[in-house]
Image 1 (cartoon, rainbow, N blue to C red):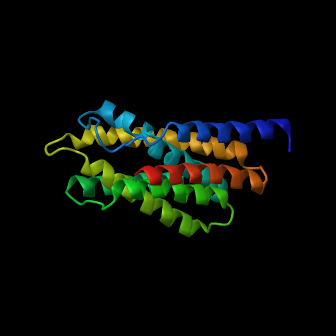
Image 2 (cartoon, rainbow, N blue to C red; image 1 turned 90 degrees about the horizontal axis):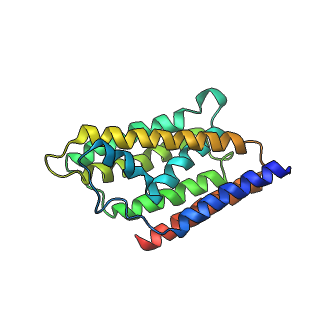
Length: 197
């Protein structure tokens, strides 16, 4: 393992550890949902940030070179569908717990990135995105401006996916134990979020 590879691993693990140490962001309570800016800021909560970056990272390693955008595209489509359903009144029981569990799920997918079948990985990605979307839509107040808020959280989500794709490409040639370590760190953060949900 080269020195640059070790530095990349340590930076990625350090970033996950620092994010986990900040605690649960409670991303679905007590924030504005009335504007584009609120939507842009929303995915920067710990649970969303880890999940979005993990989707891009997993996609960069698990999907064939020409289909790497399929993971983020699947997530974005299911996120929007869930948000529309949530704004129409469909609620997800234990929403915060389900979203925290999605971070744990993505940690496991990262740890075993090369062993998760593509179809199963995309289906799990869509299911997790639907949960995130339901939470986004359900928090919108009656008569709230869905379009601006949705445009904001979709834009930030896409940027976080792109960051994950970049991280995944940088780490693509690393040994399996590096992926186990990264996935373990994300999964541990998911467990911490789940315990606090």
